[in-house]
Amino acid sequence: MNESRSLSCRQIPSADRILGWPEVLPLLTRSSRKFVSNLLTKVLTNLRQELKDGIAEESDDSGLRQRITTQLHLEFDLSTRPLLAKVINATGVVLHTNLGRAPLSREAQARITEVSAHYSNLEFDLNQGTRGRRDVFVDRVLPQVLGCQKALVVNNNAAAIFLILNSLAENGEVLISRGELIEIGESFRIPDIMRKSGALIREVGTTNKTRVSDYQEAINERTRMILRVHPSNFRMEGFASRPRLLELVKLSRAASIPLVEDLGSGCLVDLKAFGIDDEPSPKGSIEEGANVICFSGDKLLGGPQSGIIAGDADLLGKIRRNSLFRALRVDKLTTAALEATLLIYLRNCEASEIPVIRMIHLSPDIIERRARAMLERIGKATSTFEFDIIEGTSMIGGGSTPGHRLPTRLIAIRSQTSSASQIETQLRAHSPSILARVETQRVLLDLRTVFPEQESDVLEALRKLVFQG
Image 1 (cartoon, rainbow, N blue to C red):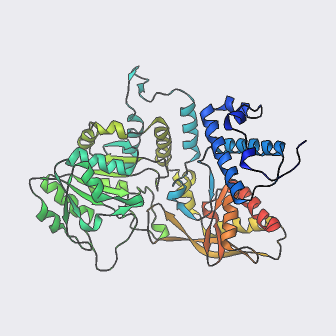
Image 2 (cartoon, helix red, strand yellow):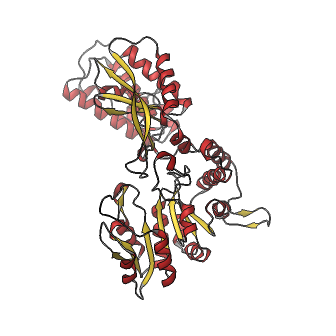
């Protein structure tokens, strides 16, 4: 038996020898030799660095072998585990872009499971026994929900506006107010997408004020479209104005130029009860006369990521015939989830069945009762942790309703021994991760965005903080 001694790089066996060890062979049957070899290279590189830094513990040959194989198995497990994971959103931001935006309804989840696990009639007409189109599933419901003539779906709203511009205005001019040449997340800019589509930008008005006469004076023989863009993620206040939609509808009809409106979030519910009266309605835009509208499916609609295009049948037909449509179309899972979401609206059940709508409707009193019940279940806290329930605000988020807040109640956590940053890190390290806010040296949990069935996980994490922190 070898005596324990300081490790040296010369003691480390070759990679080929290690790959032949009996305890490593099971990994080679679960993946390729190259994959395992790459992981082993990482393990040995880290070990050599520890030796160089003088932090490797003393060990005999058997201990070294155990250390290498243990670390290799750990790296294998980490590398073959899905990185995309469920998290608990306790930030109070209902449509959190970094957390996947809208969670799906139970019905949409069930439809995804059913359709993904079996064959489906995605492009097959069961009545005629012939090839069909995947468009029919959403086009069957959207005209009923929006009051439009026809509808299409692509993979997101950026794709929707790009396809509309390319189909209806390539090599022609598009009139747009300077105040609507906006930028949204990840440096996505309306001017950039317009140029990529082949359309020519014709700016009208000024940044803060645009009049109908500005559009009228800019119309010429090359004008192909009037584009109106909802400034989803900001508000312009003070000395600012832009024409009402009805004014632009009247102008576009007189000039025989299609009017297209990019609505951004696509809210199908009335938010006036929450003090939000400037979030445009897709149905309202269609009723007022917009020829084509587009909006996101995974924001205030509460469905999967998608871009919905709706409006006049002749213009939608031209957009549908664009060869780029096939490159931007959605798959069967998105189709299943979106159809299920829209059917909920058709049945007028969105307030109870669409998670984001249900969260928005939660009152501060209900949230406070849930918070108090949770704190009562924690048990006797140590003197180092302090829990309070305080007034606060939630956000709808997702580029929607900027500046508007929903009143809520927050669980505020403070510790005498741990900083707010350390507490937030511990919650984030929990499984599943719990994401919270940090303000004024306190960690804040907003149960508005925590599903009731997730409360047990939050409670477990809080107990760990109290009794192990």
